[in-house]
Length: 165
Image (cartoon, rainbow, N blue to C red; front, side):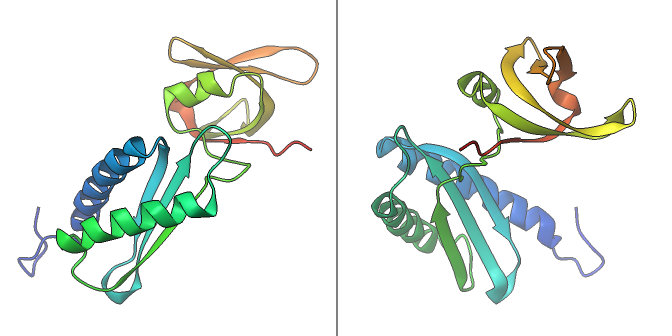
């Protein structure tokens, strides 16, 4: 796909770079006993930002973030994936982490979640309840009062853990 200038559109370049960064981070994180939660590549030119979110049992430390930042930054630079200056941010996904993979829905079963639908269901897009995991391709959510609802994973825009104290 090309625009009228004959150059590849920026969004296609960004998608390819993000996919390559994801591959690199996955490999490095796994070798260090960590899980890649997500990678974001935003902006262009000198405003480029790469955000990496990692997790591991017991939580990610500042030292873990530094280690991954050094290793991934070196590979990105050697491979010249981003030809301009960029900011590299490495952190944990936070207490309200996003659930992105099917395995996340099983792993965090029993936890409270906020779930946002792509399209409203019965006039409602936002749901909060106890995650009961996945059954096939359906998210099981126990609502206040004990009712269990089934939501197709394909209908889910975003799911985040609820911070409980």
